[in-house]
Length: 371
Image (cartoon, rainbow, N blue to C red; front, side, top):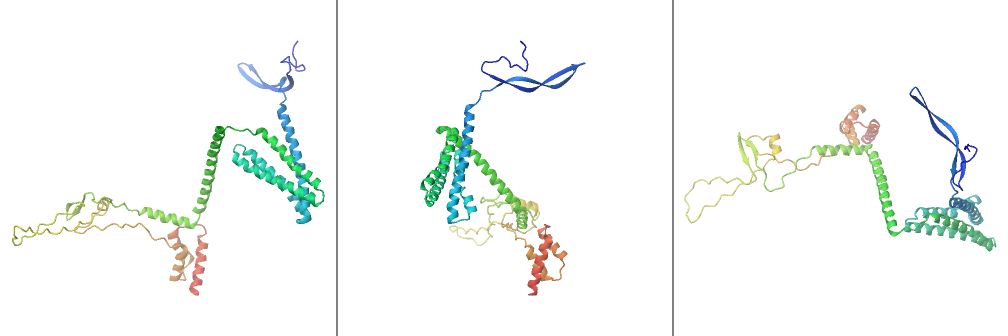
């Protein structure tokens, strides 16, 4: 018997089949040139068995959601009635009544997320029970005020039932890890958290740096530092003796070293006794040794000692825009705005809103001079 789309195939016993429309390619070749088109056809495909675990889980989740909504409404009505008669406007009181239920729901969700780390999950669990007990106490207080203590106790159990259902449902995914596995998971979380925090810190620093670079003070500081780096001098020799350097003196090359030169022979005088040798003349102090770079770049004139290079690289800070404007107005109060701008641009360069800044400082300087 030929199988048709109207009759299911004789497959494995106990397996259900259903019709499905699929597309398959069909190629036609004429004169060696293929042409492919998609053809639709109806086939029978096996139906997987039902996952009753997933069905029951979805049903339990749906029931838990309905119970939570009803419990939230009951708690909000009780807490709202208690606050409306004592403290708040009825509209605000009934809106505030849902805070306790919403709080323990959030704590329950955080506890589920942190189920791998027992310490962080314990904090969320403790906070959730505190919120639940506060909501239950509020409902019992409302029943006591209405002289219906039994109704208040029963109403307080609504939130307890809802929290219990969610605790059971979320417990389906709660697996107790072995100590080694939990430690491995914690290390991976720390690595990812460290990368995330480092990325956030770098983004914050880059954003702050971009904001500072647009300021006039940052640009002035960069200019001063660049000028200081351009005037840096080579470090002085640390050792007690300097290398021998040839410096032209009176047309001859003199070998200068860090050692003191030999003193000149004493002039001949009257003969002294043989037992008392003549005292040695004191050695003159060694002359300063210029560095090799100084002797090559700027040779000294004959018969003059080289000057020591300055050791300080601190440069004076450029005057601010306000100081330039005040000094220029003090020298000539009839100076024009263009001349003032030219003076400022010579020191600080051009920047946005510079004309407005110069004009404002000029008005202040004129007021000060007139006063």
